Structure formats: C-alpha cells, structure tokens
Length: 331
Image (tube, rainbow, N blue to C red):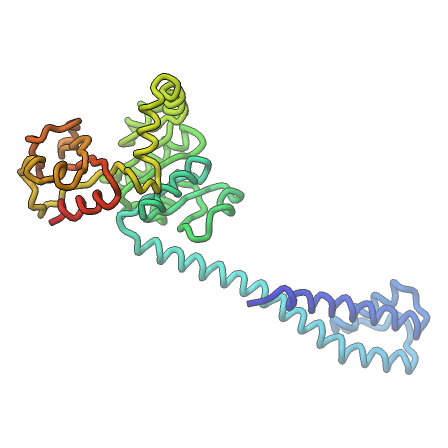
C-alpha cells in the first residue's frame, strides 16, 4: 500500500531537480530564469530539442550530470504516480467484487432504500436484532457517511438493476424511506415486480400517497408525521400508557421486551391451549396477541385459545424468558 511519505518524496524530488537545473543554468551560463527553466524541462524529459543557447564545457558537464541524476528521479516519480493510480483502481475493483460476493451469499435479508435520518434509526434496530441488511443510497455525500461495517451500494434504488445487485430476489423484506413519495412509489413498484413474495414497508409523507403505495404493492405504509403527531398527543393525554409502551419496546431493555415468535411446523404445542403449554404460569410470559395464518389478530387471547400451525405469538416478558419460549415453540 502506498503511504503518504512515499507520495511526498517523488514530489519533493521533482521540484528539487527542476529548481536545481534552473538555478544551475542561470549561474553557470548566465541565462534568464525562463530559458534556464525551459532547458531544464527539455533535458529531464529527454525530448531532444536543440539547446536554448550554445553551452560552454561547464554547461555541458552540468547537463550531463542533470540527465544522469534528474532523469532517474523523474522516472522514479512517474512510477510511484502510476502505482498510486493503479493500486487505487485495483482496490476499488477488488472492493466492489468482494462486496458483490458478500451480497450474493445473503438470503432472507432486508434491503433498506435510503440512509437518511429514518434509515440510520432502522439500521441501528436491525443490528440490535441481528438482522442482515443491505443499504442502497444514491447521494454520494450521504453514501460516504455510511459506516464501513455495513453492506451498502451506491445507486438509484428505483432502478431494477440496482435492486437486483442488492439481492432482492432472495431478500425477505424491503424498506423504502426515500425523501419523496414518488421515489418510494417507484421502488415499491419495481420491488414487487422483481419479488412477489417480498414484504415491503414504505414511507409516506402525504396522506394521499398511502393508498397509492398500497396499490403499488406495499404491505405496510408508515407516515412519520401522522405517527409523530399521535405520539405527542398521547404523551400529553395518556402519559402512563406511552411510558409503558416505550419501556416494553425500547431496544436493549433487559427487564421487559415485546417479541413476535412464530410457531414452527414441528412444534409440539400445536393444537394445544395456552394453559396447557404453561406459557403463562410456568414461564411468566404474557401473550398479548396471536396472529393467525389468515392474518386475523386475536388480542388478549383466553387461556383456552388453541395454538395452531403457523401462528405468530406476540409475547411480552424478560429476555431470558422469551428465549426459552422460542426454544419451546421450536421443539
């Protein structure tokens, strides 16, 4: 790898040799600075033009010394410059290939389109839950600020080729949080066409854009301004409720968490009631809701509610308890 010192040295050599030749011709031959500089340049570059003025014996000896020492310095400087350019290009090519290989190996990952303020928060949550993701960002300045540990692509996520490069055909979900509703609409249309089974969540700024995004193929549409307004109102009107929700859903909270746990096909608790499984009594976990395969949501299920194949349990409890529940529904 080329270091800063290795780059500075050739520059110093070139400036030093040119200055040495210019001053030498000025002193030894009595030429003005321009003629001395011109003679130095054509000598060092071995162009072979005629001498600016007739040279004395001392001037010819000086020219011979300048050729032997200066041409070597120039060639060395040019070789270092070529190495800087070539190594930089090779590094970029190898870096892109390495990134492409990493993305090609991903399966059931998430594609995040846009790395603005919302995109950063989403990425942090993904890391907290250990979910694999790829960021697609168009703006060079924003792309340069993405952390090096994140898998990211610079490109327009409204283009099919960019989404394919991000592995959309093998992805589990896509989140589009671009700055305009029109861009998010294009992303949803492209993504749904490339992967009909993909779970798509899109951001909407205007109220009228929500229905358009749903029609384009989005599974969920989130309006930050609407949600933010509700949250502020509820903080004033129902502060205890808001505090509880924040406490239960805050990332990294080891005391209480809310998670969704899908019942596996081979689970032994299928067709059993909640009280038979011992989830509430023995494990101390609260089942807030059960989402059925049909999409129906059963809130605050009874102890006699049956757990069916493919159900998703929305559970609340301590982290250790929730991990034990994941093991239970997977056996």
